Structures are given as C-alpha cells and as structure tokens.
Image (cartoon, rainbow, N blue to C red; front, side):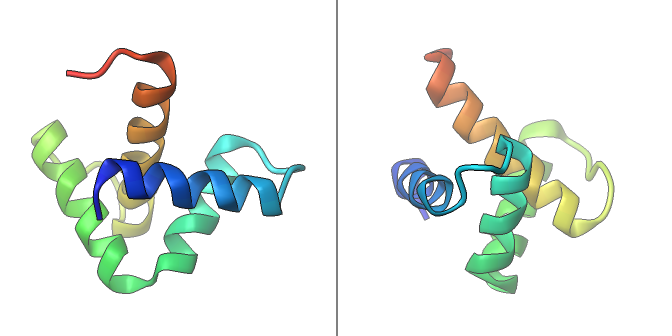
Amino acid sequence: MSEEELIVEFALARLDNPGLDVEEIAALLVRRLGPERMLQFATQNLATRGELRGPLFESAVEHVLRVVLTLRDGSGD
C-alpha cells in the first residue's frame, strides 16, 4: 500500500468516525485493513526506526501515524 493510498484510507476512516482522535483512527485503520497490512506496516516501522518498539499492532499503528503526520505537516523526506 502506497503512502497516498494509506492517506486516502485514513481520511475515509476519519470521515466515518469524526469523534475519534488521530491515534484511535490509526488503530481502527490497522484493524480494518487486517493482519497482512498490519505486518507490512510494522515491517516498515522497523525499517524506519531500526528497532521494533512494542508489539506488532502498536508498531503498525505508529507507522500509520508517522505517515499521516509527516504528510500533514509537509515534512517528508
């Protein structure tokens, strides 16, 4: 899944759940996309950070948040 696709999925999830904060939306999205995407996101988080910080699910959520916040703030690589 590309970063652009992830942003679209995140935006759609946020529209469906306006009362949730960004971390809750990221967790919802990781659950919604399933175990294969969760593993993909956690793997990308490991590659970015050089370490697996916490359980697989939390690491996947961290990756989603990093992508969303980086693109939102315009501070991409």
